[in-house]
Each structure stands twice: as C-alpha cells, then as structure tokens.
Amino acid sequence: MAARLLPALLCAALLAAAVACSGGDAADDGALGDDSADEPSPVLQGPASRYAPDVEDLAGNLSVFPPETYPVSRDIFAFQGPFGNPDEALEFLGEQGYVDGYRVQFNPDGLLAGVVGQGQYYVTVETYLFAGADGARNVYNQFEDRYSDVEGSERRDPERLGNRSSGWEFVQGPIGDTDVVAVYHRFAFQRGNLIGVVQTFGAEEHMSIDLARDIALLIDNRAVGETPAEEPTPAGPDPERTQGG
Image (cartoon, rainbow, N blue to C red):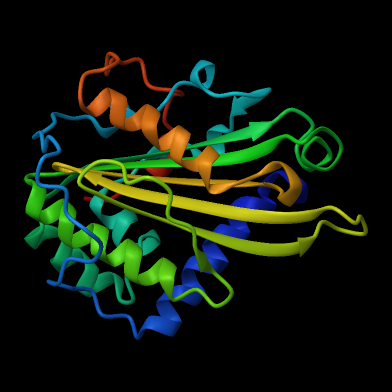
C-alpha cells in the first residue's frame, strides 16, 4: 500500500511546501506567462472529466487508480489546490466562477517496481472548468506561482500549449535503496475557461517535461475539438471524495 500511495503523498507534500514558501495569498490578478492572442479561447461545457484522457490514450502499461480518481468540488479544490488558506480560497474560487473539476491518477504495472525495473511512470491529470476565461487565467496564475516556489523545482518550458502554459522539474533522488533517481515533471496550461495540470513521476533517465506536455496535449485536443470530448469518464468517481460544494 505504501508503494502505491507514495507519489500521491509526495505530490501533496510538495504542493504544501510551495504554499508555505509563497506566503499563501489566494488572489493574484497579475497574469504570469505569455498570452497567445491568436490561440482559440473556447468556453467549454462540463463536466471537467470530459477533457481528461482515457487510459487507452496513454503510452505504457497503466491503469486507473480509483482512490485517487474523483470529481473535484469547490471545497476539495480550495483545500487541495495551490492556495494558502482554504477559507479564502473558497471565496476566491467563487469570485473566479469555479464550475467543476476532475482528477485521475494512472499507476504503472508493477507500481514502483515498474518504475525501477521497466521505465514505467505514474501520471496524475487534473482538469478544471470556470465560467469564463478570466477566472481560469487568474487561477492558472496561482498554479504557476506556487509551483515556481517549490524549493528545488526548476522551470522546464517546452513549446507553449493553449493560451499559456508552464513546466517544472523536481528531482527527488534515489528510489529506496536503488540507484534509480526519480523525478517529477509538472505541466500546466490554460485554454479558454479550462485549466489542465499534468504531473508525471518516474526514473530520471526515462522522463522529461515533453511527456507531461504530450499528455496535456491530449486534454487540449479534446478542448479544441480535435478529438471527441465524450463520457464515460476515465473511471467512476469515489463517492466518498465528492463531498462539498
């Protein structure tokens, strides 16, 4: 069980460290990154799960991990998202027109043994919808600000995706008593009223920010109509994780 939950727990710890370093302000009206005025900025319809990739879309022997796959209500996002104070975040998200969110985690065959011995990887995908592009942009700024503040995290910005995007790399160090060095990559982007966030975790020799961007591109392709944005969702929700407004 510990091996199965390790990447998710480390992700939460890194995000908490980012919030602590950044001072925890909920709102940020200044837009970070470069806007792409000639990129489409659609107003997409929910649910947010429509824009998450299916497991069949991903390379490697992966499967959905149901305990870390669930709809993200505003209450959940205020607590788990890139905000310093959940109460302030709830108000902020209301002001930004938060509509809907979804998170799905894909685990590799063999779990950490697959990472060490087969070059497999974990991936977590988050999709969030807002009433309009302005709200998505303001919350995207929070992701960029918080992830940039993680100690040891370095910017890795490949070709821009959507209206704005950013990437980061965090080298964790050896996995257990092996000489395999693990690394996280995060890629976040905003397209119209949608935010997509992808995190990968795997052996450094096999991973790069390009994989995280490629997975984010699957989200964006659904957003712009290149591929159908259809249900069913990648996995059924865990009812215990859907509480809140």
